[in-house]
Length: 375
Image (cartoon, rainbow, N blue to C red):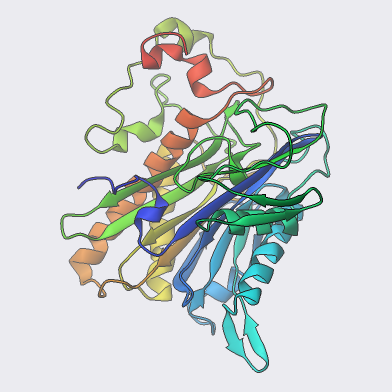
């Protein structure tokens, strides 16, 4: 088994990913969209947290009508952030993509959100349809973003609305909100993970992929905003790295004992949630996609402890592009096993790439010895 070419969700051919975020002026939040090919993808979902914020999840029950979805939206903003899906839906409708009905199409866009309210300073500074539109546009090769300042053209996955390119360092108060995007294969404090926290550390978006011996691809994207800890209980290593593929995390060292002893986070937030997507290029049914999502939760629980708490809304979507034939029982089991591992790896990548801020240091800020010295 090996990672795909980009070690990200887009290694599943046909899927596209776009991230958009606002930072400053009271904002510290964003939206991530996973776009399907025009014909859609088969989808399932597994919701295990006790405080979920979701849209269109009942539609993914195998007993219900619609077989395919056209995008999945992951967003900050708690329940307010669900409105980001409206911007994605509008873009899809304009392109004529959706479930056909008399008079037009209805795009099917399930969504899930994390709780990041107030982390930029303004409780109501949340993602909206405009940010969803920006994330959709960012998933295209040469997208443009309409804005009050004019149209912004993205170049190589980066965008800006006036002024210099945005810094990776989070600014949580003062100044105007900066509106930016990130590359599809990126990890860190971007998109839906812009304002994320995980056990007192800065959280974010992480992604990983695996190509099985027969050529099947399995990949995941996680938005890590957990009440639980992402650290191994026996030390300060990231729990998810133990599931890495050869060479993936070999550059990391054991954290210095003094750093591990010194890490005593004062408190964790009372509302959280880890959400994500796991996908494959195999042909699966809705029920099998639901199982794929369920097994990805095993990967979540390996990388975050505890998981699925009363203050988490942990939700994972399972997607199948159906580019390859349906697997037999053994082939399906191989895909399920890989799904758990790629989700654990995605959680680890989110933490390693996160950007620290005043109220939430990055993992590599707290444990610089992991990289062999100061960050």
